[in-house]
Image 1: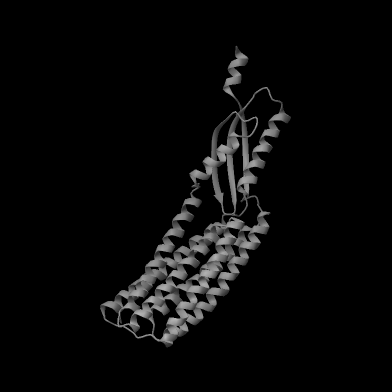
Image 2: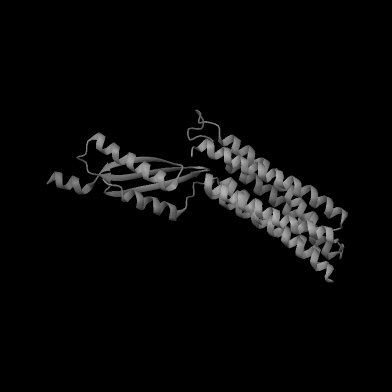
Length: 296
């Protein structure tokens, strides 16, 4: 699957998220205010930020589809990381607002009494977001999009938030009037946790961090390619859906250019076959063992 095709499929996931969040935001805020549920209103505000985050994701994915130019020799694949960062900042800001509002209401004993309708909306929202999460998680694995993976994580946290809202409203009906307010604070904490996790993962990618286990697996595959004597150096960096790999290997110095080139093509084929969208730059060096034999 080509990078452009994967980006198109990732955009479908972004559109599904936008459509879902618009519906949930509308219903949760409407039912939250009309049925006096602070937790449901907080959950609705959470989904409102998700609408903005999903739009940012869509813009980032659209920018990623731009071809390479004289200023961006590796293409624009990292644009989706900007979308992930934007989403994390928005989510963090809203989480602070929700937490402070909940704490204020708890201190002032400003507890509201929600209705059964609000509890029903929270439960339906939980099930709905679990379906969206499953869809986006599967799609993110298929296309290899870090931004869509972050969106799927956000979908799961939203499902947990909605379930927490349901528990909070249920608690009111069994006599714990403060539980709806507590649920609102917990919602805020979950939003904050998700925002920090998305930011941390994106920051690692933007600073050229790369998973050590994946790199070790790549090195093992390259070492097994016929003609490769030793893997001298290997580095990887993530550009969203595309991974760039720089590898240096040693070969028999008596090989001609055609034979050496065949080894590089074999390495590139094996890496793409095992790991998908990877652009490998292979550097060949003469192996010391053969050099010593030639000198003697």
